Length: 375
Ligand SMILES: Cc1cc2nc3c(=O)[nH]c(=O)nc-3n(C[C@H](O)[C@H](O)[C@H](O)COP(=O)(O)OP(=O)(O)OC[C@H]3O[C@@H](n4cnc5c(N)ncnc54)[C@H](O)[C@@H]3O)c2cc1C
Image (cartoon, rainbow, N blue to C red; front, side, top):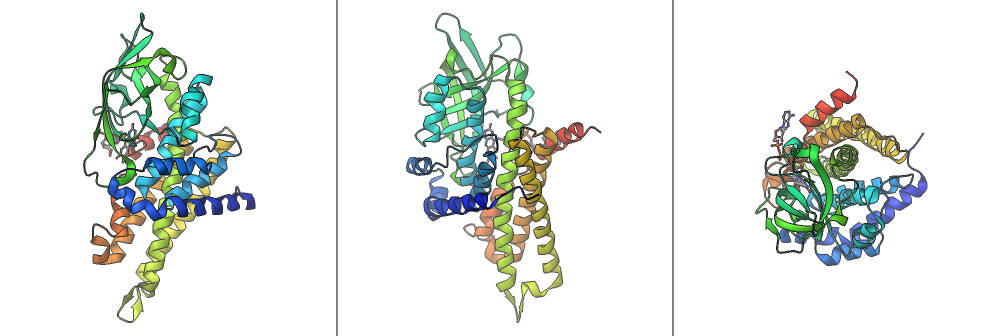
């Protein structure tokens, strides 16, 4: 049974039009500026694209949106736009009415930008080593947040971060951690740009240093000390989204490659006249078809409330591996033209190379898939 209806495809066409109007014409400038400007958030918010559901039957529209953002061919932009959507999942799931009013709704209108601050210099794949700490001052009813979060998407522009921090004076790491909202426009939250990232250039990547930042007790998302079970669900959702975004990027790359091999001539023969080139393309295109089917099946499972770790991890692994493989093939068949820094194949390659280790390294996800697969 097809997962997507004609109405979904009409929605896809609308999303493409809006992205073609707001994002694509400005994408190179945003890459140069290393961030998305405030006006773009507002424009996307005004068109309803930052207010897409995180669950239920309408989630399929969110999946389409993510695929289309990926299909712009700019992973920095896909990440800048969709990591806030992942951060807002925590507000949708655990947010109080006040938190929804003060953070979720302004972010959905494009008036505030959210970051997701989980990784630390010594805690990327291994979150057990989380060291950032927020201890509650009983008198002021405020947490004092101290520590460093790194490689934070939109770190340079975000108004607030959904942060995972230890809130226990006795239990270290993730076991004693909570999820909380940290306002970033404060002298005790210092942003340092990550200079010259290899790819993902429009993401406003930053390291965030917290030096006793005051976080009201009311900014805790969900119960204190429950970050671990919250993350187990949140990270499955994140991997689903990363997989769909990677599917979009892989689609862009395979389309570009397909057009190139049909038009680029070696003497009198187009590249597609060579069997080895045709086979390479057919392999990629076939894998793309399989990953797309799996991605929308996974999206449907999520919309029914049945997403599991095996599915989320497997999709993320397969989609990001395909994105990388397609980018390498594209660079290869563009020859020297693709080797110029400012060429499209070079950008696709720079971006794709990190996809297998962001949003959960694929090695870690293979371990999770192995365990979840019941072996
Ligand atoms: C462009 C970009 C955007 C990002 N955005 C965010 C963000 O918004 N918020 C956030 O919190 N973080 C973000 N990150 C950080 C990202 O989540 C981490 O890079 C990731 O979790 C891996 O952590 P690490 O870089 O510390 O690598 P490490 O954990 O040090 O791992 C290094 C390498 O070791 C290998 N490895 C790890 N575990 C295993 C294993 N079990 N078996 C075998 N090999 C293994 C992997 O190949 C991995 O790449 C971003 C990173 C990038 C590059």
